[in-house]
Image 1 (cartoon, rainbow, N blue to C red):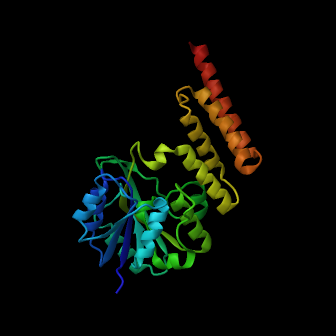
Image 2 (image 1 turned 45 degrees about the horizontal axis):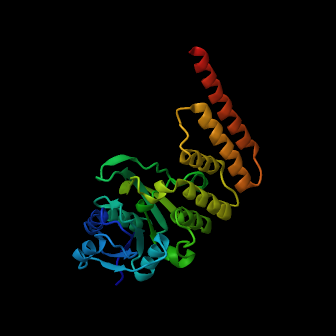
Image 3 (image 1 turned 90 degrees about the vertical axis):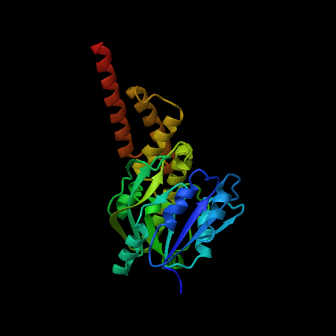
Length: 298
């Protein structure tokens, strides 16, 4: 008989955190689950830690093509009816899998369920709540309000709609949610805090924000046929932040973000829409007026 859950942890060089990840999974008590760790050939303390728990999980360690490849490899190696993936620096909160299992049992027409989550620091302390929102596909196109470790989907979703897109390095989860929704999968929001998503300077998506936002915009253009204005502005902010421009200098910062927004609009839209032109004009005008008022005040 297949287990109720398959939990997959992709890992590479996360010996600093992986034991906490493992314990957060192994401490769950759903009706049944299998746990597989797909390691990319770590050279730190990861493997000794995995050996310590190998009577409770399955693991492999070999070179792979990155996180997306590792998750897909884990999905192919497992058989559980509900799938979740938990990165090797994130955690589940106690009772998360039982809560999800009960929800799926009570809602057989639901394909995907996601809950609330917290950003946590290196000591597992809460930084803030992840900005999760109730399900709305149009809103999802504007902002990724789903926290990946707090989402679970039925294996039938994979059978119908395929695996993660291995051409993506950063937004493979966001692309998958959009693809599933476009294909007719039914999403539901579970108002329960299920997972902690760790934030620290070495986090992949924090350390490469310009690349992250560029990949998101390319993906959105491909999947939606357009890049929502908000993602154009997000990219522009990432570019300006990467240059180290002082945010306290409101006028200079607004002017730089405005210029990068116009360039990004041409890159992904082929032209500058009236809405972006209007927004940029107001940013620069409003912040320039504030700067002038401060100067006169002195």
